Length: 501
Image (tube, rainbow, N blue to C red):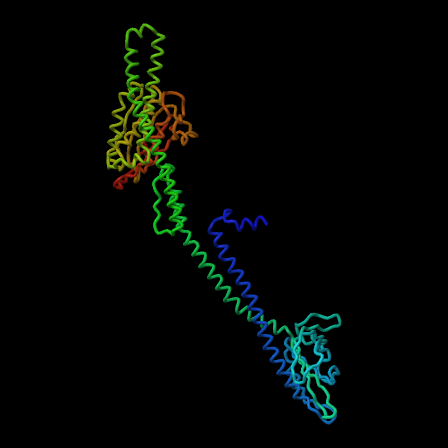
């Protein structure tokens, strides 16, 4: 019961199967009803045809029985009997009796008519009965059921015709009975059913295929809507564009767009708050950082180790807070709404990588890092927001300098691979475990507790790269180190081969 209930509950399976079931099930029921109706109708007409032939046969047989003085003369030659009994599977049985019940000619096992108290003369009476045929097995017939007494019991359709004969003063009654197996009637009805049901079945199959195609075509807009939603990034809140769809699907898309608009407005308000708060914090943090630097440089603090240690902690906290505020601003600029509002231009990724590496050399030298770049010979034109991509590259180089450790080396390179421009930042530091490669791109996630990072650098990089239709991934370097690989599609379809950096 639970299984059938699940079948008829749309929430437990696909809408396609639910509609298909409810459209095909009535067709199946109608097909069965039509088959039963056709069989009954065929049986009725077969009965009418057989009854008419039996009535005709009984009258023909009655004409062969003629009065002769006080008796009867039966003109029924042997050849006529052979013709009647020629087909063993569809034999015609007959019996003549006078008075009714007293056997004269034919088959003595003919079932007697019942329920006729006052029969009318020359009026055929039709009824069903069972006839025991002792010679059925010998003739090779296959009708009827075997009998314990030998032979077979055959279900027959019988016609009884009462006739009057004799002198006017001494009338007598003659009963002529003719019977035929009901097997022929059932076979005829069955054949009519088969001849009718086969085209009807083909029609049902054709209708089922048409219904299936119609349901599939009708639900195609829902499939397109699903593919549009599934193909979206988790932070893509742009309206869904769905054309040439039924009103129901358009209403669903409109409801989704309304929800997306509300979520987009909420996220925009949150990002605006973060941006405003970061802007407000930037100035006092910069002032605090400057004041602590001045205080650390004063002679008074130099003579007081405890005060100098406390001021150094304040200075480090201010530096860390200023970096966090800067990263929050960069993250706000990389959000979809902010990125969409900024212009996209065509620029040379090779040149950009060279410029960023050159800008970060002083900071790398201060940290004891050997920073260099591998210049390619071919320009790498890409399309995107140059300012945001520069910021992403700065974050990658900054992360490498922060975590590679003194004495390590950092290499920045950009070259073409196929139809992509590949930018790599590789260091020889301790690296990141491969189990953390995906997780480290999440916001505020750090692979190490060393350094004063805030866990937003790689999240900003991922956001900017994906906004520019690119892809970023981490690769471990043997024996130790980390390589960040960023791919952008080449703007002009330029292809080339290069070594991985």
